[in-house]
Amino acid sequence: MRRPEPRGRLTGGTAPLVCSTNLLNTFLMPLTPPCPEPTAKDGGSQMVSKSEGFQVLWPRYFDKGLSRAAGRRIKRSEAVNSPRAEDIAKAVKGLKLKYRLEPEAMHPANAWKECGRVVVSSNIEKTKLIKWVAKRLK
Image (cartoon, rainbow, N blue to C red; front, side, top):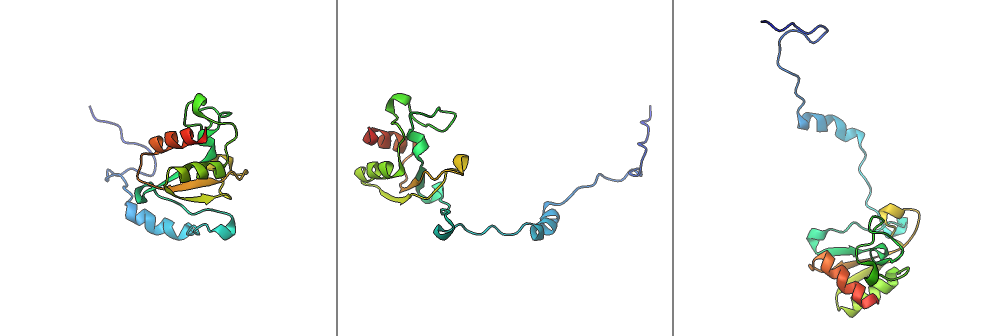
């Protein structure tokens, strides 16, 4: 039994239309302006990469008042009340690791609230680093 031909403008038995990714990018690239790199002057903070040996520690990872879903990364019994980025920096300093304190940084989930962050230069696994810092915060 023969299949009925579809009705409409796309009849003719030709191969389906395939869009090349390169061709698509050629047309879309001019429409998307380049994103400027955030600077400290703008109130933004630099992007950091885990592959370059950096780990970012946000105060919400250690906040006893937050749930795991809201961003806490450790057990509630190991967490502290309202940690500050400065406290985390002191704890990292106690571990003798290189770090950079960025007090003006804002977590993407709380873009309206400056909470700060600590960028640690280390190849240690992030979960281990968070546990070590949590012990020093207590």
